[in-house]
Image (spheres, helix red, strand yellow):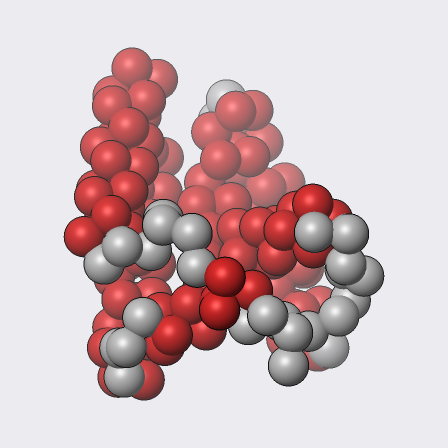
Length: 135
């Protein structure tokens, strides 16, 4: 609970500071990129549960780390993959905050393509019934 509150505080502080210094779109995108892995994992979990008509607070094995483990990766490999995705998103956020709008769009596109390529490489985007079962 305290960790989530701290992340929320950090995200809002970065957004407010960014809104004062730069364009509004960049001020919103940068903190979301920095915290991209937990934000998108949570968002996808909520969407997945709504689409499957499951309670959104019910635990399942559809989270990113569970799906990676279900693909046969060990914990160390899963951690390195999540660190890698966080690194790509973090570097993208840093680069975006110092470049023009056009270059920012290119950086976002390249980052997204890199992440999608990696997800395809480990077959993460393919349907996996086992990965969404409840405990």
